[in-house]
Image: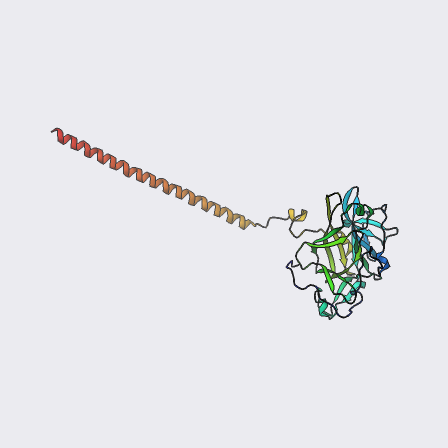
Length: 324
């Protein structure tokens, strides 16, 4: 996936399009919310379920919570009864073919990673039967007591067979607002006010397993700061294995992590032989140069010694001639 920035990701909109894309998200704290499902409160004593879970329908949110005193990004699973929190590494969002949506032939949606008329999987901004509804919140009571104004959700990378775009659509008269786009440079920040509950459209251009690296960070009223980075797991399409999504290893774009650290050296035997040959030639050249310098020194010293000897004999002969 290219990380080159693109221009004009958002455009004005004048007409309504596919209902599963044109939807409205409003913070839970806002008065007169048009979607009652966005009005929620989270209990402080909700449990954390650690067993693996495949969530293919119902309401879930990404959000920070303190776990044993540590700031942690979790999944708030409201599809469970009663609702629970789940660690990211044990939860898979299954996007079934019920989420297939045709890309509208409208220039306002030219930012989508697919051609008009083609089908893409869309997790919609408004809840749709048979499709998991993925949003985010900053409503955990301990979080509300400690953060200063809000938190930042940061996209750090995406691994998958296609592209991922997340955008908001504020009614029929507002243009789509792109929040995250896997084709753009990382990191990509998304500011979230405190006590917020929001949903957006998630668009996946191809079926398959997607791993999405997300960080949640915040400044605290104490003057300190918190952050945690986790990997979201999506199994897109009916034919995509949720087991594969759960077991997949994510390697950051920078090439760090266990997989990158264990990667074999790309240097071949021939390269090693060439390196050794070059080193040997350099050594031979250096030795030859040293020998040449030594020979020059010896030659110069020899000529000097010969001249001194000739001068000495000449001087001795002159002295003998003076004595006769």
